[in-house]
Image (cartoon, rainbow, N blue to C red; front, top):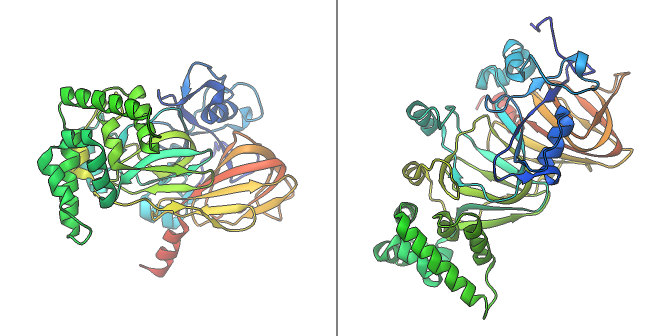
Length: 441
């Protein structure tokens, strides 16, 4: 049953949210940051031109909770306090999640929705699967603050760059032949083991050899790392005078400027360098190495903040855990182009139950319908202005504009009409989960 004192949006069933911001050092500073602009519009806050605005969080995670905007203050003025978190309200009103979501995940939203503004590289990291997340949370609760896994997807808003997954065996052999500093880091024996392999060998042999080499690289002594990176940068600067450096070599030199004497500079040679155009997406399963480099994106994940780091960071590094947990799969990651639902909505469906993402670009004066979903959704107005109706029979509509974040309960249909071209992102539970649930699989 719904609570009596119900914070609400202008229409029943849809609730406007005040969301959280993270000011990590790698974020884009001031007004240049989309995160900053969205947060300022969403919260009524002023933008600090000197502060890095890294992540805008929409969801129920304790590290960045969202709050329902009370009716008395939703229409203007500076808002300084909110009494009802989305998490607590959903816990008291689980019917808004839909029966199937409650049966699978309990009385909480199973996804965390974010916008990222990346000015400089994030750490080389991976996210644990559920079993490892539970172990890490018990062993190091201050570092690993929840017991959930964290599959995720990044959908590019601007040009977006990342390191993701291990390069193929053929590419790795080329690195060992052309980057002598990598051989110095991992040793002759580990190098020869990799060079003697081919794609016909057993998969476990390939993974074992890569695991040994990468573990030796990431565990190298500090003095050796510093010496080798110095040799690498001198060589590349010298060679740049007689040939054009590769994109990966240019990236490595930029990484060294931002993270001098960091083992992640060398590790970048072992990982795929991915460049996404706006509208392209990349998904990451558990135990896959990655590092976002620069750009702005929508990010969605299971509700977790577990990160195992090992390079390109001043934060705590858990090298042993990271090297032990990785899958060591090789090859270029799948890039999602999205599937058009209609002329305005493109759907991105990763292989994870917890979430999917819709991108809606609605030209001025046009309308679109978001059908009712069996699970909850969160809508972000990333640009423009328009009107929202809950259903075609509704006689009342409400203005929505850039910075608005809306929680939409299960089984709620949404009609949107743009006054100024609207850019909307919606995250909800993956519809394939509901299909599987209905089929009893």
